[in-house]
Each structure stands twice: as C-alpha cells, then as structure tokens.
Image (cartoon, rainbow, N blue to C red; front, side, top):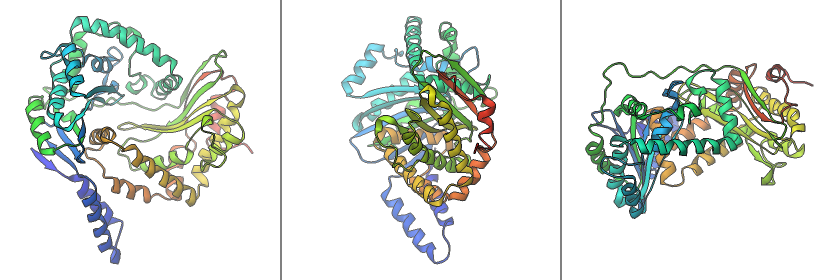
Length: 472
C-alpha cells in the first residue's frame, strides 16, 4: 500500500513559485496556515490499483462512494446504454441480499443509496451516519461485485428505463444537449446518449452487463472516496477487506479511451407548435487537465447566466444579461463549459421567443468577440471573484465534497486543494482571457443544436461568420 499526500505538497510548491525574494517567507507562512486549517485529502493506493481518498471533517455523518472510470463513452453502437442499465441493476439484489433486504437495510440505517452515470464515469454512493461507514462500504462492495443480474429484474428494468427515456424527452434542455453532442461528435462515443437508443434497451441482456463489468470494473479504474466523519485508516482497512480481490490487471490490452473528434455542424428540429425555441451553440474546448481549462472557466463566468424570472438583469455584471433584460431578447440563457478527458464543449444554451432569436444570437456573438478583443481587467477580476465564490458554495456538505474528491481523482489522479485552485484563478488576467478565447472561439466552426419554432435562426454560415466579423 502506498500512501501519498501529493495535493498539499504540490500546492505549497505552486504557491512558492508565485513568490520570490522577501515575500518568500510570507508565502511559506501562508501555505502553512492554510495547511493547518483545511482538512487534508488523504490518498492511498491498494496493491490492485484501487485508490482510497478521503477528507475527515469530523462530522457525525459521512458520504462514501465508488467513482468508476467507465461511462457511455466506453460503449459502442451495439451496446450503447449498458453502463446506465447496469447502474439500474445494482440495487436489484445481490447473492447476499434480495432487493427487499437491501432496501430495508438502508432504510433501517437511516441512510441513502444512489447512483448516476455520465459519459465518462459511473458512480455509486451512500450517505449515512459516521458509525455506519463500515456497513455502507460493505453494501457498496456487495452491489458492484455480487449483483445477481436476474432475468426477471432485467426485464422489469427495461420498462423503467424506457419510461425514464420518455421523461427525458420532455426536458428540452436535456434534449438539446444530447443533440449538441450528437452533432459535435459525429458518429463517435461522445455523440451517443447516456441512456442509449430504444432498440438497444429492448435487447440488452445479462451477457452484455456481465461483459461490461468484467471489462471495466478493474482496481486501477476505481476510486473509493469519502468525506464527512471519516477515518482514513479505517477506510483503508475496509477497502482492503471488501475490494482487495477486485482484479487489478487485464489479461490482454486495457480498453483504450475511444477517440472523439469535434465537428463544426448543426442539428435543427423545427416545431412551430412549440411556444419557445431552445438552442445551444458551442465551440470545442479542452479536457480537464489542460492548462487552458482555468481561463475558459473564467471566460464562462464572464458570460454568466440569466433567467427572466429572477427579476434582475439590468444591473448585473454580465453584459449579455443586461442586453437580454433591456431588449427582452430571451427567457433565459446559461453559459457552460463541459469538460471530458481530452476535449470539451464551451458555449451557451438559450431559450427565446421566435421573434428574438436572430437578435439574441447577434448579441451573444458580440460578447464572445469581446472576450477575444476588449475584455477589461475589472471585468476579469469580478468574474474571478464570482468563480471562486461559486466554487466554495458548491462544496457545502459531505456529499459534494465526496463527489469533488472522486471526480478529481479520476480526472487528475489527485485532488487539487482549494488554495492551489484559487492561486491559479488569481493568476488569470485580461490578456490571458483574450489569448485563450481567441484560440478557441475566434474564427472557429461551432456546433449548434436547436429545437422548436426556429425559422428565424440564422443559417449556419451566417452564424459561423459572426465568430470573426461582426455586422456594424
């Protein structure tokens, strides 16, 4: 077993690199002060490659979960939807517990058991009292290693997933983002939906589920993360006992991350019976660990979010929010920066009435071009403060902290301490933003997805031209 504390070592070194000369002593003192006041994220790697990561904040409750480097991106056209189907089957009984026994045990503990699947990760987690951590870990180990995957339960879950797909189809934001991925990553794994197509859900069988588990649920691709009232030493012993027999190696070659190339393109689904148009436009951004991730996060914050129901807008710092409010250009918009391992989507989702689509698109392009050419230091400083605030507010409670640990361990192989991330954000200035945005936005072919009464949405070439030459 190899115990490491890379996060704090790296963060102190990074902090020292930002300073020199007489300020060096102050930097050392500041770093030591932070290290004393921030709970340490401890990381240990077992012999089979499974990583155990935890943060002990001394609470009476805890969140513990398994973050697995396996999602819909690792599927092909034939088995697309398997990872999500498997997530559903995890709670339907094991060799030790029936579904009823599992549900009663969780209820009697006063705990919560949940799971979700994304394009690159599958997560199973439990929230419980600190005293019940051993039972929670044992249950998580049981459901991913001993699920019976019974034929009757598989058939029942088909209906559940098909109903879930119908519900997703009523969520237009989900629909638009699925279309956006489909057009941005043509005929590749990231272009497929997480739930999979209907025909796959109707044909996925037990063999497909077992094959997915044996292919992807390996020690080096799993992180056991925990936060709240957690003893790292106890968690290591629990992990060794319950997960020590998980295979750590592949008999042949390990499955490679499927390549997914971005394509500037569009999908339009016109439906004039709908009252509002739902649209998303994005350029290709970067993966989690790329150096340009932080500048693009700040740029994303500069564009901001706005909703008509909030009442504000005219006095918000986001210029696009000011114009949307004053000109009644849209019902809402939301900037996004979606990162994957080696690529990403940076863009804007908006909901407009049919008559304001063209004008909203024009002002959005103006703001994107402003990021490339004329953003000011004051605007960047305000966005950096807002980004840091949102980052801290997100980490409120053991569950988001546990999720942050698990995700970062998969993405970066360590957890980046907050003071290091803040130092990286503070290092961004207006020049950095202009350079990054020019690199990824200016004169780039975007991906566009639009649903609803979109007759007045400009044609693709006109939108494309707006990303390097604005009308007067």
